[in-house]
Length: 285
Image (cartoon, rainbow, N blue to C red):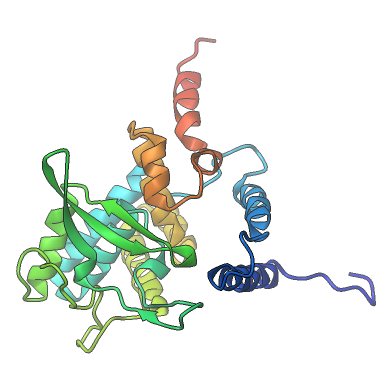
């Protein structure tokens, strides 16, 4: 950088965009304006996001674990929790983030920038809803911009939810309006914050890496340690795997909390490239 010039960091730009977004939403709420010019900024941000994720060699946009890595991580946490129940929190957080496409911030307390009220995630976020004459469980999530969304729970997820609640000496399934903290501190006393959840995820990855070392998978262990602090890998892994298994991308997009299906398709190109690589592998020479 030449003397006398200044380049704004991406983190500063992101913070400024968020602040302006809050400002214009408050103007809309007070009736001063009808729309926010930040819609255009968000569209530009999506283009930046694509450039951020994309590999130089045209690889996957959304960084994720391989199927083998995910299965190893899940198996490791189940074994660890059997040996020491302190890992029950690690298991539940990792399963939730992967299966429900959650960000760390969506499991932690959040303060509404407009009202200054703090939202504390609780077990009451899990609710039942009747759709098409069938009763389903879903989870209420407060996402970016304080936008609510409801994510249907996979039937297999209920086993982990019941296990976690049993460890906490709670009834098998949440009751309507239950205020029990979603992810408690180790010794009780309320909901843990974002940094603590990030540490749980990191510890989970490192436990898996240690087990890989013990089983002679040195390179795999090194890879796991390199991504131990990248919590978004779980969200991307869950979404990518579900798209590859045939879940409609529109459903995945809504559960991710994306503003458009087009944005989801742009980020999760691996869903379409998987088949191409598989057929490419089997070509005759």
